Image (cartoon, rainbow, N blue to C red):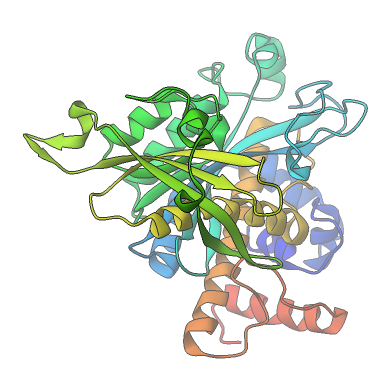
Length: 389
């Protein structure tokens, strides 16, 4: 495991057992491949739960945000793949299938981030298996898929992940997700029943308690209803949009304690400054004392998981695995999450001490250079071994 994680952290071109094995001094990748597919260890109770405890200790903050989203992995062959997949309408590069419908895999993930500061990392994952897989038990047995694993839509996987995270040591003040999950009434109700506050993206056609389609609430909004607010920093600086917010009627079952209200409901809209016709909508369930600026920051925190996906794929080989068994996917993905969390925590510690940080809060290299990368790798290896850099 140490050699595998060191390989994920190493500046090698591919993190697919071959190059990490060479980096660790192995003559062949057989040992690392057996470690992923054949050895006896549990990636959930041992690594995933321990990872969440580590992130809570190193990155936990009272304003922490849990972010749910999914990402795709382009793979050839049909081992644990979904078969030919159409190009998704979503324009995000990491979620599109390649032209020609190449086989791909998909996973639902959770990230933990601050609402108002740096620091973010992946903390949970579930592999999505379509019905064509779960209904073919022979195929599942070949891939060593657990017998009890039945079909679960991505929304159901998201609910399982959210429940685990809310029961973990992670200090979670908010939950956010894109419209694929925000439009799911069961997901929103689960959060409300768990006492979690949220700001979830929803389609413009979304209905909510006490109102018609959410887009209709903002269609006739006067100019003074829109306020220019930054929802956080992006690669090119502050991400500034026009925002508008409307209070929604309370739901007695969830928003009152006895006869005393303890929650508010909001509809939120984000409008592009340069393209006013581009409007995104959100539903929020919040504490009584919350500002629109705070809601905007939470809604904007959703993009942190996109940055986690980018860093995990570009730096640690999240999508570079070559496994044919169900457990191998979970083991590789979980150890990539561990490597990403380790460097995100290291960057945060350096930043708090005011030192020069060569890694940003997303766990990515702040600057390039082959010599610098080798030096970073040696220092990280020493840290993993428990020696001081």
